[in-house]
Image (cartoon, rainbow, N blue to C red; front, side, top):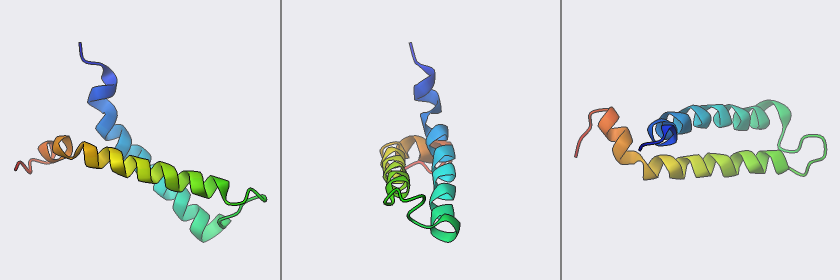
Length: 72
């Protein structure tokens, strides 16, 4: 039995990558790296999530390429 997470993990990673990119850009351009004396913790966590999402997309590249019809 296939679970819903297997089928939706790729689209979820792409959507969350867009959201976290917006969070990182808002920190860089509007908020600043350090917000309310947190020592840059929120920014660092956003960078960590961004990196983990990129790794997830790299691991699923075959599924992504098959959706885009770029077969090897």
